[in-house]
Length: 368
Image (spheres, rainbow, N blue to C red):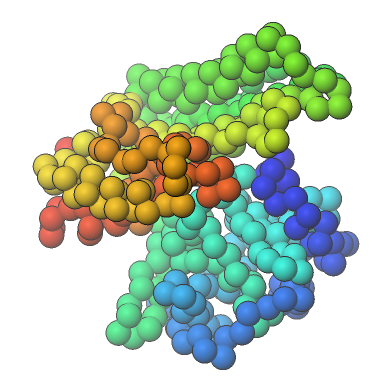
């Protein structure tokens, strides 16, 4: 599946103003949008990297701490490039990459083709900014916000000593169907071989399920060369430290209807033994986490623009879908489960400070 076209449509065409640029200088980053927000009312914040205060500033916008992409490239050494064919910026390297399209009307971002509600990138006063949470959750940078000093402190994250690569399932595409199905596989000299195999098997099995479902739909008929079916997926690493790995798998299918369908699934593992963790394993330090989440989700889910015909929230499922980031736990529901398609995938993020007692640690008894 193309990392940019599934949700962005005409935004890609409007981004062609930078055609011909391969490595993006600051001047291009600062001139990419004709419709821009202003910083006149946005408080400036200081940025520290490895103990050094940077000349360039971040800003506070609608309660979010935003950091300029130019600083990530020039001071942190994070690669920033522009793809003329895809008409999109790429920020970062390795297993997670941030993709950004800037059009004349809006700015769009995703990580490896996955766009969550925490990826609200902005073009403000001619400069491209990303949320601090996106940087620390997906680009390998620890970020701490000091409200009193209005300062963000950045350091390189200490991640698990593992290698993450991706494999592609072999499947024949043709004029009536396209298959682009991949999955992550981990390796590392410090990993228990049985644990490594257990984790890899779960992730591969997920991808095989996507392919099997696609082939079943093709066998049932209906695909045409005018409206070919499409089956694919993307993945992103949401947490990779302290002996824990959390992976987001996102699947896409199009079978000739008004739009495609997207499903998002989180997998969180203990690297020590390969165990697939449940929410109770992550929040073991709080035996009452369900009571809090059920009450809070009841208000939030029932407050969505669902209306008649959509379910009301009752309680967390026994095998509740979730993933973990540095920011906390994100609870995930399905498309159409509680709200119309236009709302997107309902998901709600809670910080560990909200979910655990003071001094309580996530993954109690699970980390290496």
